[in-house]
Structure formats: structure tokens, C-alpha cells
Length: 197
Image (cartoon, one colour):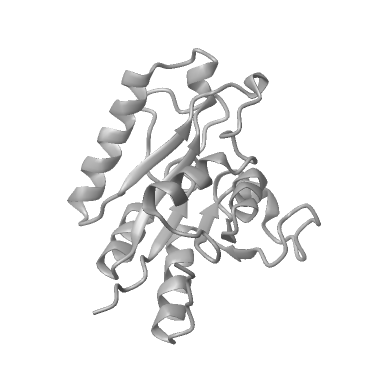
């Protein structure tokens, strides 16, 4: 039997899954899920989707927290997700500060390319969702289908139609992660979702 195509979704973390903080999320106590976000991920999982995070974590490069603190945040996220029947398959993060000029800090597509290599898939058409312009620019540069969430930094785009021209062509806008998931699952149910593998 032929393999079914891998159903992959790439999500931003801060402002998309958890509450965005202008002073950075620096500890597990500061990591707070957005209402309905974890349940939305669980809905994706139950529909057979693999969920991967691509996240800038320049707080590491800036010395605001260490890898142990980041691991503690993610342990909390995994535990809270498990409690609602959800899971994140993998977390890819850029630890660099902006002045290190790496290839993995969004809006550069390095993290997305790493994900494509890890899963052995072409990212063309793979849905990606985030709350900031750089999330979508990074995903679109890797061939992903961009979705803007009006949470976190995305709140600045609430009521903005059309989006500013710097947003990738075809960017779709959703109230939050739950609305994005509802959109994906409804589209899938209509049989219209074609992901190149």
C-alpha cells in the first residue's frame, strides 16, 4: 500500500500557543497557554496531523534565560497538552540573538528547512500559523502556506484588510489557533487539502 502523505502543521509558539510577553517568556511560571490553544492542537492530533513548533528564542542568546529554563517551559507545555489529549511532535528553535545573523532566526527560513529535512518532506503547501510577520515570511520562504493569527503581536492586524503588502501573498487570517484549526479541519473534510510530499 502506498504511504499516506504526512499531514504536517508548523506553528509559532509565543503569541500563538502561549501568551506573548514584551519582556520575553523566561520561565515555566511565565509560560501560560492562550485560551483554547492546547485543545486546538489536540484536535489536530486526533485528526492525524503532526504538529511541530518553529520558534525564535533569542532570550537564550540575550542571556535572559538558559536552556534548562526553556526545557522546563516545554515540559510544562507537553504536560498540559497531554492532559487534554494533545502532543507536539518536535520543537525547533533558534537560540541566537538578532546580531548573530544566523540562518535560523525567523524571518529567515532555516528552522523550516530543518523541519523539512527532519521529516523528509517538501514543505510546499504545508500550513504554518503564527502571530507575526516574520513567522509568515519564514514559512512562505520555505514554501509553506501562511496563516496569520490575531493573537499576540497579530492583534495589531485586527480589522486591517487588506493586510500590508509585506505579508506573503495569500496569507489567510484567523482569530486564534482554534479558528485556524477549525479552518484546516473543515477544508480537509471537503477533500480540498492537497499537501505535496
